[in-house]
Amino acid sequence: MALLAGGPYNLPAVALHVYNTRTKRKEAFVSAQPRVVRIYTCGLTVYSDMHIGHARTYCFWDVFRRWLEYRGYHVISVINYTDIDDRIIKDAREKGEGTLDLAERVVASFRRDCRALKIKDYAVYTRATDFVEEQIAAVKALVDKGHAYVVEGEVLYDVRSFERYGQLSGRSLEGMQEGASGRTDSAETSRKRFFADFTLWKPSKEGEPCWQTGEAEWPSGRPGWHIECSAMSTTTLGKNFDVHGGGIDNLFPHHENEVAQSEPLCGHPWVNYWMHPAHLQLLNEEGQPIKMSKSLGNVISIGDLVAKHGPDAARWYFGVTHYRSSLAFNWQLLDEATKGFDKVRRAVKMIADRLAEVDDAELRVPTVGTYAGLREGDAAVPRERQSFGHGALGEINARFMDRFIAAMDDDMGTPKATAAVFDYVNELFAAGIETNEALDAASLLAAYRCLTRHLWVLGVEFPDERLFPELAADCFAVASGDSAREEALAGAVDKMLLLRQQARKDRDFAKADLIRDLLTEAGVSVEDTPKGPRWTV
Image (cartoon, rainbow, N blue to C red; front, top):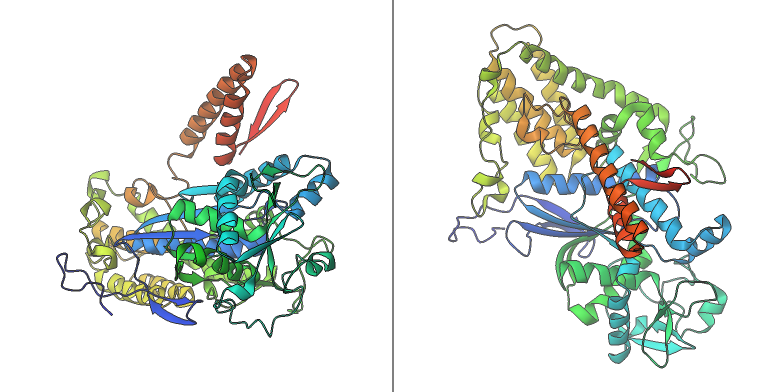
C-alpha cells in the first residue's frame, strides 16, 4: 500500500504495520496528517503508585513513540490522570487526606517513576478534574441524542442504542456477564434498563467532590469513569485521531464504552488504530504464575526495579517479549537477561574507550538527515542512516539496520529487534572493536552511533555529548553534564519556591497554587514544613 506514492513530495511506500484491535488484523500505519501522529494513552487512576505491571505498559508506549520519531514523524502524545474516582475517594478517606491531595501525591510519584525508567515526557498531561465542563457537555449531548437516560439524578448510557457495541473487544451483548467491569454493585444494576449500561454521571455523596451541571434532572454530581477519557482525548486531539491505547485491561469495558459514547458525537471511526499491550505475569521462584497484590506483599515498585539492575536492563528485558504477549517476570529471569545485556553494554563502552583517545576534531562528523533536513514525505527514511554506513564497519551496520527496521516495522517486533542488536554486537566483536588497529576513528564512530541510536529506540540510552551530540540531546542524562544540570535544576526550583512564598505572603493563593502545580507537573514534590518548603525529585 502506498501513501500518496509518486505525489508532489514523492512519498515513500508505507512500511510500518501495526495490529489494530479495532479490525483484528495487522494494518499499514497511515497517519491522518502526513508526518504527524496523534496518540492518546490511558494513564493511571491516581490512588496508588505505579508498579512493574504499569511499567511494562508505559514502556511499550514510550518505545512506540520513539519508533515513530525515528521514522521522522512528529508525535503529539497525550496521557491522562484519572483524579476523580470511587477508589480515590475510598483511599483518601482511609488515609485521612483530601482526594486531590492524594491524587497530586501519586501524580508526582508517577512522573518520578517515568523519569527513572527513561520514559520520554508526553506533550500533554491531562487531569479528569480539569475537563469536567467538557464531560458535562458530552453527557448532555448523549442524552439529547437518545443514547443516555436519567434515573434519580444519575445518567446512564444505553448500550443497546449503539449498534456497534462490543465490536472493539469482540464481545456480543448476549454473551456479556453482569458485573464484568468490576465497578458495579447490585443497587447500581437495579437502576439500569440493561445490566451492561454504564454510568456517565452520578450524584455525589456527602463529602465527595461535586460539580453543578445546570441540568434539572441531574443538577449536580461527578463524572463516571469512561466519559472522562472521551472528553480529554477529543478536547486535546480532535474528533478523530490516530492511535488510542492503554493496557489490555482497558479494552473492556473502558475502551469499549469510550467508543460507544464518543462515536455518536464524533463519527466513525473515532480512532483509527487501537493498540493494547498484554499483561506482565509475575512468577514465583519455581516459575509458577502468582498474583501480585498489596495483601500478598509482593508488589514490585519502580524503585525496586531500578535499584536492582538499573533502567536500561529493565527496558531491554521488556523488549525481549512482544508487546502483545504476556511478559513473564521474576528476579531470576531479569538476572539472566541482564547477563546477556551486559555484552551490549561492554560493546558500547569498548568503542567509547577507544574513541576517548581520539582528538575531538576527528569526531566532528555531523549526522546526515536530522529533523531540520527532512523533506515532506521522508517519514520512512531513518534520520542518520547515511552516516551509519560509512567506514570499514559500514556493511555490518547496514545489515543490522535492515534487520532492526524490518523487525520494528512489523507490529513493533522488539524481540527480533533485540536479537538483531545482539547479533550485531557479536559481529562488532568479531570485527575487532577492542583490538583491531585497522579500524579508524570514523569507522568506530559510525558503529558507536549506529548501535546507540537503535538502542535509544528501545529506551536504552548511552548519551555522550562528545561522541553523539544529536542523540545526547534526546536522552535523559548526558554523561558529561549531570552535575551542571542538577545545579541548574536546583536553582530553578529554589527560585520558583521563592516566588511561591512571596505569592502566599501577598495572599495571592491562586498564583501560589499555580506554581506548585507547575512543579508537580515537572516531577518536583513540595512539602510545606514549619521551617519552610522542602522539595524532592
